[in-house]
Image 1 (cartoon, rainbow, N blue to C red):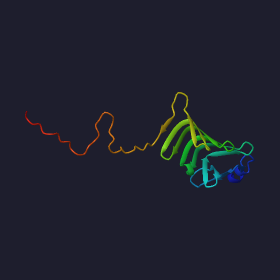
Image 2 (image 1 turned 45 degrees about the vertical axis):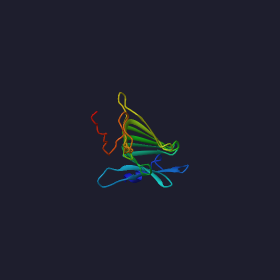
Image 3 (image 1 turned 90 degrees about the vertical axis):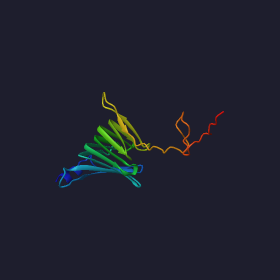
Length: 170
């Protein structure tokens, strides 16, 4: 069976704990979809799930490489991402996504050819494909205007009508 052959490969095995981070690579198969590899990186109370068509884990370097239909879900930081390839560097605590990268975090989105996520810093670094640009879409909450504050050059709003003194003939 494919499952037993896949899990017995020497380069696909549990990576030992690095600090409080550990990674486990396995194979998930469903009757309607082709087999895909899944990895979970966990710290207390947090899980990062990495899904792809193929994954390789190197116990010596601590690098997990995922290729094909890569999906990342990190609910603790409200992050979802897709790409063609991802490499998780467990010792450096960074993820490098390559190829048509799309990242969604709390409603904000980021598109680029290569996106690096620095886990400890919670920071993304995005690079475009040659001759292209990176695209970010941010949800901006407009603050309601403060009462009594008017745009520059305009008198303050007064809901009461202003009455001028009557003009008396001279």
